[in-house]
Image 1 (cartoon, helix red, strand yellow):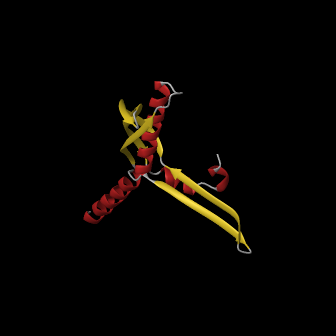
Image 2 (tube, one colour):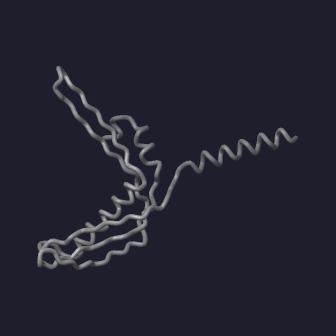
Length: 136
C-alpha cells in the first residue's frame, strides 16, 4: 500500500509540475518619449506606453536567431530574427508629463510605467513552429 501511495504521489507531483510549467509572470516596464512640436499629447503618451511595454517584454526575454550564408567569401544571405514573449494584459498604467530645458529651449517628455502580464513560454512556442507558421 505504501508503494502505491508513493507512486501516486510522484505521478501527481510530476503532473502538477508539467501543468504549471506555462509561466505567466508580471514584469514592470518603463518608457520615455520626448514630444515634438508636431505631435499632440495623446500620441506622445501612446508612444511612451509602447516603449514601456517593449521594456517589459525585453525583461521577460528576447531570443535572437541569425543565419548567414556566403559563397566564395561573399555574403549572399543574412537573416536576423528577434522574438519576444507575448503580453497578455497591461495594468497599473501611469503616464506623467516631465518638463525639461535643454540649451535654453523648453521641452516636454512623457514617462510611462506599467505592469505587464507576460507569457514567458511564448519564445519556446515560437521555436517549435515550422518555418511557414513562423511567417504568419
